Length: 171
Image (spheres, rainbow, N blue to C red):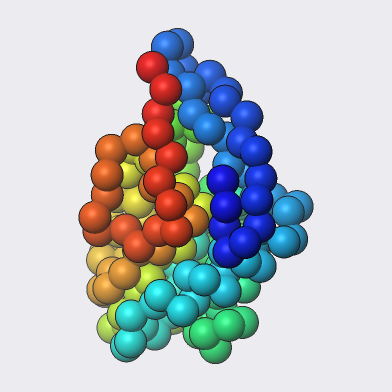
């Protein structure tokens, strides 16, 4: 793959019986994260107020896009933390985990989203499960999903996602 001039070979990894993916993991890869973040920041539509990203793998990407666009970002966590105030949670099954996991918005962050135009930031959008749960949380607290940006889409085409590339599923 090539992201903003940064090239990487992706290993093919089985994530479920008979289903393999070209594994894109940008955690700890500063060059890829920076290049992808700069490229996606340039593709954000006008009028976005805040970025929302799921915890963990897209966190560095959201940080770079935030820095490049001067937009704040909110992190949707994967567990309820004791310090959270009135958390809003949704369960999701991601293709990479294969089992249910939580997505949790701290109630403290609701005012940052309510009445705002939101861009969801993720590393890879594949089955769309995480994206759907993020959208539900954002809309439930009064935000409007105005854009979805990701480094890659995977599997089926996703025209609603602005991505830098597309990865196939291998069956």
